[in-house]
Length: 382
Image (cartoon, rainbow, N blue to C red):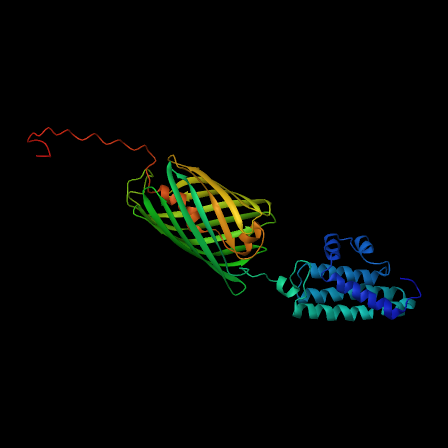
Protein backbone atom coordinates (compact mmCIF):
# COMPACT_ATOMS: atom_id res chain seq x y z
CA UNK A 1 0.00 0.00 0.00
CA UNK A 2 1.26 3.51 -0.70
CA UNK A 3 2.96 5.26 2.20
CA UNK A 4 0.43 8.11 2.27
CA UNK A 5 -2.50 5.82 3.03
CA UNK A 6 -3.70 6.38 6.63
CA UNK A 7 -2.92 3.53 8.99
CA UNK A 8 -6.57 3.19 9.95
CA UNK A 9 -7.57 2.64 6.32
CA UNK A 10 -4.75 0.12 5.83
CA UNK A 11 -5.91 -1.88 8.87
CA UNK A 12 -9.50 -1.78 7.64
CA UNK A 13 -8.46 -3.13 4.24
CA UNK A 14 -6.39 -5.87 5.88
CA UNK A 15 -9.39 -6.86 8.02
CA UNK A 16 -11.56 -6.91 4.89
CA UNK A 17 -9.02 -9.19 3.17
CA UNK A 18 -9.14 -11.71 6.00
CA UNK A 19 -12.94 -11.56 6.18
CA UNK A 20 -13.17 -12.20 2.46
CA UNK A 21 -10.87 -15.18 2.87
CA UNK A 22 -13.39 -16.79 5.20
CA UNK A 23 -15.16 -18.21 2.18
CA UNK A 24 -13.41 -16.63 -0.79
CA UNK A 25 -11.72 -18.60 -3.57
CA UNK A 26 -8.30 -17.67 -2.24
CA UNK A 27 -8.59 -20.10 0.66
CA UNK A 28 -8.23 -23.20 -1.49
CA UNK A 29 -5.12 -21.93 -3.24
CA UNK A 30 -3.53 -20.84 0.00
CA UNK A 31 -4.14 -24.10 1.81
CA UNK A 32 -3.06 -26.44 -0.91
CA UNK A 33 0.43 -24.97 -1.13
CA UNK A 34 2.72 -24.77 1.89
CA UNK A 35 4.48 -21.85 0.24
CA UNK A 36 1.24 -20.00 -0.39
CA UNK A 37 2.34 -17.08 1.79
CA UNK A 38 4.94 -16.15 -0.79
CA UNK A 39 3.31 -16.61 -4.20
CA UNK A 40 -0.46 -17.24 -4.39
CA UNK A 41 -1.36 -14.69 -1.74
CA UNK A 42 0.68 -12.04 -3.49
CA UNK A 43 -1.52 -12.69 -6.52
CA UNK A 44 -4.81 -12.94 -4.66
CA UNK A 45 -4.33 -10.03 -2.29
CA UNK A 46 -3.04 -6.49 -3.01
CA UNK A 47 0.65 -5.62 -2.48
CA UNK A 48 -0.34 -3.97 0.78
CA UNK A 49 -0.11 -7.37 2.46
CA UNK A 50 3.67 -7.56 2.12
CA UNK A 51 4.33 -7.58 5.85
CA UNK A 52 5.39 -11.10 6.92
CA UNK A 53 3.17 -11.11 9.98
CA UNK A 54 0.09 -9.99 8.07
CA UNK A 55 0.61 -12.56 5.31
CA UNK A 56 1.21 -15.29 7.85
CA UNK A 57 -2.06 -14.43 9.56
CA UNK A 58 -4.07 -14.40 6.33
CA UNK A 59 -2.53 -17.73 5.25
CA UNK A 60 -3.22 -19.34 8.63
CA UNK A 61 -6.83 -18.15 8.69
CA UNK A 62 -7.32 -19.26 5.07
CA UNK A 63 -6.18 -22.77 5.95
CA UNK A 64 -8.24 -22.79 9.13
CA UNK A 65 -11.45 -21.88 7.35
CA UNK A 66 -10.97 -24.46 4.63
CA UNK A 67 -9.87 -27.33 6.84
CA UNK A 68 -13.25 -27.22 8.60
CA UNK A 69 -11.49 -26.20 11.77
CA UNK A 70 -12.86 -26.23 15.28
CA UNK A 71 -12.39 -23.65 17.98
CA UNK A 72 -9.05 -25.13 19.04
CA UNK A 73 -7.71 -24.77 15.53
CA UNK A 74 -8.93 -21.18 15.36
CA UNK A 75 -7.09 -20.40 18.61
CA UNK A 76 -3.99 -22.01 17.16
CA UNK A 77 -4.42 -19.72 14.16
CA UNK A 78 -4.17 -16.70 16.41
CA UNK A 79 -1.02 -18.06 18.02
CA UNK A 80 0.46 -18.61 14.55
CA UNK A 81 -0.29 -14.97 13.84
CA UNK A 82 1.37 -13.81 17.07
CA UNK A 83 4.66 -15.64 16.52
CA UNK A 84 5.89 -13.67 13.47
CA UNK A 85 4.81 -10.41 15.13
CA UNK A 86 6.79 -11.29 18.29
CA UNK A 87 9.87 -12.35 16.28
CA UNK A 88 9.78 -9.18 14.25
CA UNK A 89 9.54 -7.07 17.40
CA UNK A 90 12.36 -8.92 19.17
CA UNK A 91 14.71 -8.89 16.19
CA UNK A 92 14.08 -5.27 15.27
CA UNK A 93 13.24 -3.17 18.38
CA UNK A 94 12.94 0.05 16.38
CA UNK A 95 10.15 -1.56 14.37
CA UNK A 96 7.99 -2.38 17.41
CA UNK A 97 5.64 0.48 16.62
CA UNK A 98 5.33 -0.74 13.05
CA UNK A 99 4.28 -4.25 14.10
CA UNK A 100 1.74 -2.80 16.50
CA UNK A 101 -0.09 -1.49 13.45
CA UNK A 102 -1.27 -5.08 12.86
CA UNK A 103 -3.01 -5.34 16.25
CA UNK A 104 -6.36 -4.27 14.76
CA UNK A 105 -6.04 -7.24 12.42
CA UNK A 106 -5.41 -9.53 15.40
CA UNK A 107 -8.59 -8.30 17.05
CA UNK A 108 -10.50 -8.83 13.84
CA UNK A 109 -9.21 -12.40 13.59
CA UNK A 110 -10.34 -13.20 17.12
CA UNK A 111 -13.80 -11.72 16.62
CA UNK A 112 -14.22 -13.36 13.21
CA UNK A 113 -13.17 -16.80 14.50
CA UNK A 114 -15.62 -16.78 17.40
CA UNK A 115 -18.53 -15.35 15.44
CA UNK A 116 -18.01 -17.83 12.62
CA UNK A 117 -18.07 -20.80 14.95
CA UNK A 118 -21.24 -19.68 16.66
CA UNK A 119 -23.05 -18.36 13.58
CA UNK A 120 -21.86 -20.88 11.00
CA UNK A 121 -20.91 -18.30 8.37
CA UNK A 122 -21.14 -19.94 4.92
CA UNK A 123 -17.92 -21.04 3.29
CA UNK A 124 -17.21 -21.75 -0.36
CA UNK A 125 -18.83 -25.19 -0.01
CA UNK A 126 -22.01 -23.66 1.38
CA UNK A 127 -21.44 -24.90 4.95
CA UNK A 128 -20.33 -23.07 8.04
CA UNK A 129 -17.35 -24.08 10.13
CA UNK A 130 -19.59 -25.35 12.91
CA UNK A 131 -21.63 -27.47 10.51
CA UNK A 132 -18.66 -28.78 8.53
CA UNK A 133 -16.66 -29.79 11.60
CA UNK A 134 -18.84 -32.89 12.05
CA UNK A 135 -21.05 -33.99 9.14
CA UNK A 136 -24.05 -36.10 10.19
CA UNK A 137 -24.13 -39.85 9.67
CA UNK A 138 -27.21 -39.38 7.46
CA UNK A 139 -27.59 -36.01 5.74
CA UNK A 140 -31.41 -36.05 5.96
CA UNK A 141 -34.35 -38.43 5.61
CA UNK A 142 -33.88 -40.04 2.21
CA UNK A 143 -34.65 -43.16 0.23
CA UNK A 144 -34.48 -44.95 -3.09
CA UNK A 145 -36.58 -47.23 -5.28
CA UNK A 146 -35.29 -49.55 -7.97
CA UNK A 147 -36.61 -52.07 -10.44
CA UNK A 148 -34.66 -54.90 -12.05
CA UNK A 149 -34.98 -57.58 -14.70
CA UNK A 150 -32.64 -60.40 -15.64
CA UNK A 151 -31.80 -64.04 -15.09
CA UNK A 152 -30.36 -66.16 -12.29
CA UNK A 153 -29.24 -69.67 -13.18
CA UNK A 154 -30.99 -69.45 -16.56
CA UNK A 155 -34.29 -68.58 -14.89
CA UNK A 156 -35.77 -65.17 -15.65
CA UNK A 157 -36.52 -62.91 -12.71
CA UNK A 158 -37.82 -59.40 -12.07
CA UNK A 159 -38.44 -57.34 -8.98
CA UNK A 160 -38.55 -54.06 -7.09
CA UNK A 161 -36.76 -52.89 -3.96
CA UNK A 162 -36.65 -49.81 -1.77
CA UNK A 163 -34.95 -48.25 1.23
CA UNK A 164 -35.68 -45.51 3.76
CA UNK A 165 -32.83 -43.93 5.75
CA UNK A 166 -33.23 -41.67 8.77
CA UNK A 167 -30.70 -39.80 10.93
CA UNK A 168 -30.50 -40.66 14.63
CA UNK A 169 -28.74 -37.59 15.95
CA UNK A 170 -25.52 -36.62 14.20
CA UNK A 171 -23.40 -39.73 14.70
CA UNK A 172 -25.90 -42.50 14.04
CA UNK A 173 -28.36 -43.54 11.39
CA UNK A 174 -30.85 -46.28 10.58
CA UNK A 175 -32.11 -47.75 7.34
CA UNK A 176 -35.04 -50.02 6.51
CA UNK A 177 -35.00 -52.20 3.39
CA UNK A 178 -37.72 -53.96 1.46
CA UNK A 179 -37.79 -56.22 -1.60
CA UNK A 180 -40.16 -58.18 -3.80
CA UNK A 181 -38.75 -60.51 -6.45
CA UNK A 182 -40.53 -62.94 -8.75
CA UNK A 183 -38.63 -65.83 -10.25
CA UNK A 184 -38.04 -69.58 -10.08
CA UNK A 185 -41.82 -70.04 -10.15
CA UNK A 186 -42.16 -68.37 -6.76
CA UNK A 187 -42.54 -64.98 -5.08
CA UNK A 188 -39.76 -63.75 -2.79
CA UNK A 189 -40.36 -61.18 -0.05
CA UNK A 190 -37.56 -59.53 1.89
CA UNK A 191 -37.07 -57.03 4.73
CA UNK A 192 -33.86 -55.65 6.18
CA UNK A 193 -32.52 -53.08 8.60
CA UNK A 194 -29.27 -51.30 9.41
CA UNK A 195 -28.13 -49.45 12.52
CA UNK A 196 -24.82 -47.68 12.07
CA UNK A 197 -22.40 -44.96 13.06
CA UNK A 198 -20.81 -43.06 10.18
CA UNK A 199 -18.45 -40.22 9.43
CA UNK A 200 -19.04 -39.39 5.74
CA UNK A 201 -15.40 -38.36 5.45
CA UNK A 202 -14.00 -41.59 6.91
CA UNK A 203 -16.29 -44.60 6.98
CA UNK A 204 -19.19 -46.57 8.45
CA UNK A 205 -19.60 -49.33 11.00
CA UNK A 206 -22.84 -50.94 12.13
CA UNK A 207 -25.19 -53.89 12.48
CA UNK A 208 -27.30 -55.37 9.71
CA UNK A 209 -30.27 -57.76 9.48
CA UNK A 210 -31.83 -59.44 6.45
CA UNK A 211 -34.82 -61.76 6.24
CA UNK A 212 -36.19 -63.25 3.01
CA UNK A 213 -38.78 -65.91 2.46
CA UNK A 214 -40.56 -67.73 -0.36
CA UNK A 215 -42.23 -71.07 -1.00
CA UNK A 216 -38.79 -72.52 -1.76
CA UNK A 217 -36.51 -71.09 0.96
CA UNK A 218 -36.17 -69.01 4.11
CA UNK A 219 -32.98 -66.98 4.60
CA UNK A 220 -32.06 -64.97 7.73
CA UNK A 221 -28.76 -63.08 8.12
CA UNK A 222 -27.64 -61.18 11.25
CA UNK A 223 -24.23 -59.57 11.21
CA UNK A 224 -22.00 -56.50 11.04
CA UNK A 225 -21.03 -54.19 8.20
CA UNK A 226 -18.31 -51.64 7.67
CA UNK A 227 -16.94 -49.27 5.03
CA UNK A 228 -13.79 -47.19 4.75
CA UNK A 229 -13.66 -44.20 2.41
CA UNK A 230 -10.74 -43.04 0.33
CA UNK A 231 -11.10 -40.12 -2.07
CA UNK A 232 -12.42 -42.15 -5.00
CA UNK A 233 -12.50 -45.66 -3.52
CA UNK A 234 -14.70 -47.36 -0.93
CA UNK A 235 -13.68 -50.61 0.73
CA UNK A 236 -16.46 -52.55 2.44
CA UNK A 237 -17.32 -55.80 4.19
CA UNK A 238 -20.41 -57.56 5.56
CA UNK A 239 -20.21 -60.73 7.65
CA UNK A 240 -22.67 -62.57 9.85
CA UNK A 241 -24.58 -65.66 10.86
CA UNK A 242 -26.78 -67.11 8.11
CA UNK A 243 -29.67 -69.47 8.75
CA UNK A 244 -30.76 -70.84 5.38
CA UNK A 245 -33.53 -73.39 4.99
CA UNK A 246 -34.12 -74.70 1.47
CA UNK A 247 -37.50 -76.37 0.94
CA UNK A 248 -36.57 -77.97 -2.41
CA UNK A 249 -33.68 -80.10 -3.70
CA UNK A 250 -30.56 -78.14 -4.67
CA UNK A 251 -27.20 -78.86 -6.24
CA UNK A 252 -25.32 -76.97 -3.49
CA UNK A 253 -23.86 -79.69 -1.22
CA UNK A 254 -24.70 -79.26 2.42
CA UNK A 255 -27.98 -77.38 2.08
CA UNK A 256 -29.92 -80.63 2.42
CA UNK A 257 -28.40 -81.38 5.85
CA UNK A 258 -27.24 -78.02 7.22
CA UNK A 259 -28.93 -74.69 7.85
CA UNK A 260 -26.25 -72.64 9.64
CA UNK A 261 -23.54 -70.87 7.63
CA UNK A 262 -21.41 -67.73 7.54
CA UNK A 263 -22.52 -65.18 4.96
CA UNK A 264 -19.89 -62.66 3.87
CA UNK A 265 -19.30 -59.90 1.33
CA UNK A 266 -16.01 -58.17 0.53
CA UNK A 267 -16.06 -55.39 -2.04
CA UNK A 268 -14.17 -52.46 -3.51
CA UNK A 269 -16.11 -49.65 -5.18
CA UNK A 270 -14.20 -47.29 -7.47
CA UNK A 271 -15.54 -43.91 -8.64
CA UNK A 272 -13.85 -42.92 -11.93
CA UNK A 273 -16.27 -39.98 -11.78
CA UNK A 274 -18.43 -38.88 -8.88
CA UNK A 275 -21.53 -40.07 -10.76
CA UNK A 276 -20.10 -43.43 -11.87
CA UNK A 277 -19.34 -46.42 -9.64
CA UNK A 278 -17.69 -49.72 -10.57
CA UNK A 279 -17.77 -52.34 -7.79
CA UNK A 280 -16.00 -55.68 -7.64
CA UNK A 281 -17.24 -58.10 -5.00
CA UNK A 282 -16.64 -61.50 -3.46
CA UNK A 283 -19.39 -63.40 -1.62
CA UNK A 284 -19.24 -66.53 0.52
CA UNK A 285 -22.56 -68.36 0.82
CA UNK A 286 -23.28 -71.96 1.92
CA UNK A 287 -19.49 -72.57 2.07
CA UNK A 288 -19.24 -71.73 -1.64
CA UNK A 289 -17.57 -68.86 -3.49
CA UNK A 290 -19.09 -66.26 -5.79
CA UNK A 291 -17.62 -63.28 -7.68
CA UNK A 292 -19.69 -60.25 -8.68
CA UNK A 293 -19.35 -57.03 -10.68
CA UNK A 294 -21.69 -54.04 -10.42
CA UNK A 295 -21.80 -50.80 -12.43
CA UNK A 296 -24.02 -47.82 -11.57
CA UNK A 297 -24.27 -44.47 -13.33
CA UNK A 298 -26.32 -41.49 -12.19
CA UNK A 299 -27.78 -39.82 -15.26
CA UNK A 300 -28.17 -36.05 -15.75
CA UNK A 301 -31.80 -36.49 -14.70
CA UNK A 302 -32.05 -35.56 -11.04
CA UNK A 303 -31.79 -38.64 -8.83
CA UNK A 304 -32.11 -41.19 -11.67
CA UNK A 305 -29.48 -43.91 -12.07
CA UNK A 306 -29.15 -47.05 -14.17
CA UNK A 307 -27.18 -50.13 -13.21
CA UNK A 308 -26.06 -53.60 -14.27
CA UNK A 309 -25.03 -56.48 -12.05
CA UNK A 310 -23.42 -59.80 -13.00
CA UNK A 311 -21.82 -62.72 -11.22
CA UNK A 312 -20.51 -66.27 -11.46
CA UNK A 313 -19.85 -68.93 -8.85
CA UNK A 314 -19.40 -72.57 -8.01
CA UNK A 315 -21.78 -75.31 -9.18
CA UNK A 316 -22.55 -73.50 -12.42
CA UNK A 317 -23.99 -70.38 -10.78
CA UNK A 318 -24.45 -67.28 -12.97
CA UNK A 319 -26.64 -64.21 -12.91
CA UNK A 320 -27.12 -61.02 -14.93
CA UNK A 321 -29.47 -58.26 -13.82
CA UNK A 322 -30.07 -54.67 -14.93
CA UNK A 323 -32.39 -51.91 -13.91
CA UNK A 324 -33.16 -48.34 -12.93
CA UNK A 325 -32.84 -46.68 -9.52
CA UNK A 326 -34.47 -43.44 -8.33
CA UNK A 327 -33.00 -41.58 -5.36
CA UNK A 328 -34.96 -39.24 -3.10
CA UNK A 329 -33.30 -36.71 -0.81
CA UNK A 330 -31.52 -33.78 -2.41
CA UNK A 331 -29.43 -33.16 -5.48
CA UNK A 332 -25.94 -34.64 -5.05
CA UNK A 333 -23.43 -36.86 -6.76
CA UNK A 334 -23.71 -40.64 -6.73
CA UNK A 335 -20.64 -40.92 -4.51
CA UNK A 336 -22.13 -38.51 -1.96
CA UNK A 337 -25.42 -40.42 -1.98
CA UNK A 338 -23.56 -43.63 -1.14
CA UNK A 339 -21.54 -42.00 1.66
CA UNK A 340 -23.97 -39.45 3.10
CA UNK A 341 -27.35 -41.14 2.63
CA UNK A 342 -28.24 -44.82 2.38
CA UNK A 343 -26.08 -47.97 2.53
CA UNK A 344 -26.74 -50.80 0.06
CA UNK A 345 -30.07 -52.61 0.33
CA UNK A 346 -29.01 -55.82 2.07
CA UNK A 347 -31.78 -57.82 0.37
CA UNK A 348 -30.69 -56.73 -3.09
CA UNK A 349 -27.03 -57.55 -2.50
CA UNK A 350 -27.84 -61.15 -1.52
CA UNK A 351 -30.83 -61.81 -3.81
CA UNK A 352 -28.79 -63.69 -6.41
CA UNK A 353 -27.02 -66.14 -4.14
CA UNK A 354 -29.91 -66.85 -1.81
CA UNK A 355 -32.21 -67.52 -4.77
CA UNK A 356 -29.58 -69.85 -6.23
CA UNK A 357 -29.60 -71.83 -3.00
CA UNK A 358 -33.10 -73.08 -3.83
CA UNK A 359 -32.64 -73.73 -7.55
CA UNK A 360 -31.24 -76.69 -9.42
CA UNK A 361 -28.43 -75.69 -11.78
CA UNK A 362 -28.62 -79.06 -13.58
CA UNK A 363 -30.90 -79.36 -16.63
CA UNK A 364 -34.35 -80.58 -15.64
CA UNK A 365 -35.11 -84.22 -16.41
CA UNK A 366 -38.04 -84.74 -18.71
CA UNK A 367 -40.86 -86.76 -17.17
CA UNK A 368 -41.74 -90.02 -18.98
CA UNK A 369 -44.89 -89.86 -21.10
CA UNK A 370 -48.05 -91.26 -19.42
CA UNK A 371 -49.17 -94.73 -20.37
CA UNK A 372 -51.92 -94.93 -22.94
CA UNK A 373 -55.23 -96.30 -21.71
CA UNK A 374 -57.19 -98.55 -24.09
CA UNK A 375 -60.03 -99.35 -21.78
CA UNK A 376 -58.54 -102.49 -20.23
CA UNK A 377 -59.02 -103.31 -16.58
CA UNK A 378 -55.36 -102.66 -15.89
CA UNK A 379 -55.66 -98.99 -16.88
CA UNK A 380 -56.09 -96.25 -14.36
CA UNK A 381 -59.14 -95.04 -16.21
CA UNK A 382 -61.04 -98.18 -15.34
